[in-house]
Image (tube, rainbow, N blue to C red; front, side, top):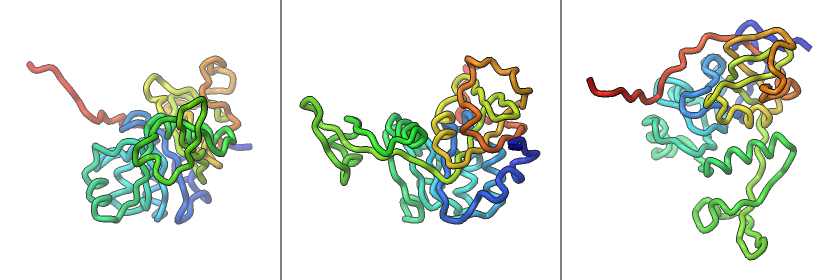
Length: 231
């Protein structure tokens, strides 16, 4: 099975459709699939639901899809760095499903593992728990959270081989492994495609079985908030 594609545009061909659900790896601007996001914007796909920790910033990352009004709903845990997100949400143009950060990660992991739901204490007694099943375990109250499975997942890794085995680098690992398993089809963009067998087997974070297509791209790696020492 050929997994290596020459461009993000080619990798997305035949996979996108209006109303689809997409899991997007990254945390802020760290470890985001920059090239696949840009290519997704160019497809013109609309009314999509995006499952991602946040929605980037106004002019980079997932924020680019907000500019073009391609996102109908966000399933996120943090949205504080994007003024356009706030404007669309407060005006009723954008749906939002808030999740505690750990709950979102576990929902993605559970979906990828074939687990339809799990119980957690996180969110009990808050608006997060409204409308969800409550259950007692050992005298403690838990709420039921559903696993997430998406039509497509797009992730960013440091290195990958031609079979789709992926290695992430440091904090850029963030939500990428969970998103990679949650997609019915997973696309990965990497900084370097290496020969099969050259990756340290103990450092393969996402095995090839989860990845259907892979590209190599150039990455801006923009810093979301730069803090420098006064001169």
